[in-house]
Image (cartoon, rainbow, N blue to C red; front, side):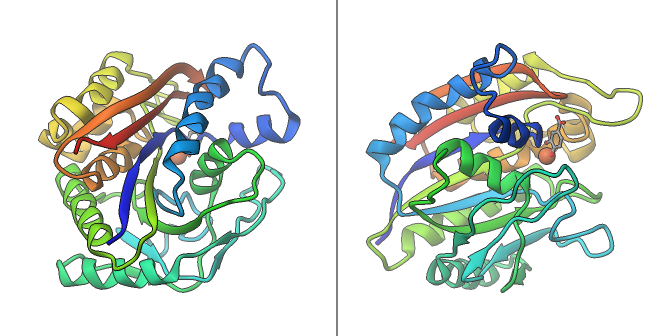
Length: 279
Ligand code: DHB
Ligand code: FE
């Protein structure tokens, strides 16, 4: 059976891509953010994942507002990025772990999740930047399975539904007949709002309480509906749903190994956490 080594959850602001391309990691603006990943990469050396299941939200590169699946899972042999309009250099392609993709799709459909299955799929900054933060050489020593959750066009799946999705992803991986070491990577958040009267909205108290809750009371955020979560975390802060699903995939108990929280990166409260299954 596959072995779950742990999870990383992180923000995914597009400006990170520009900072990497220009080599700005040690600039005063960027250093508190990039330094938060030193311990994550140390942890990766011990965790040694073979496969990463990436839970993220596409922002218009692969899915646009005309066709927006609530949940989509990639089953492609390779995944590439493309210019999202910022002129950021594209990065090497990712190799798909197709056996796990199909195992996951079959398990999730069996568990009554109605998925969109993607045998071709572009992956946007929410996928590529967290991968580049974990593996700055961009040599991708892992295979990947993308899992997309709609957090960009209402109606969104509820926090409760995302928790259940994550639980089933975890169960599927644990039941996968493979000796692979599997990691979860959840991207998005933390609090931010890019548009409207509340543009620039950040809620540090809520973010820190949410990070704490993932190990102390992990279903805490499921008490709120999407509108309430938007009120607390901002219209894009609701990307915290990916953190929630990722935590659920770890199983009953989890312990925190590392965290960093820094305000702001662009318009976003940036956070990163490493968690391991408790048992
Ligand atoms: C920003 C944050 C995001 O999560 C995103 O997808 C795009 C932009 C920002 O803070 O600029
Ligand atoms: Fe985003």
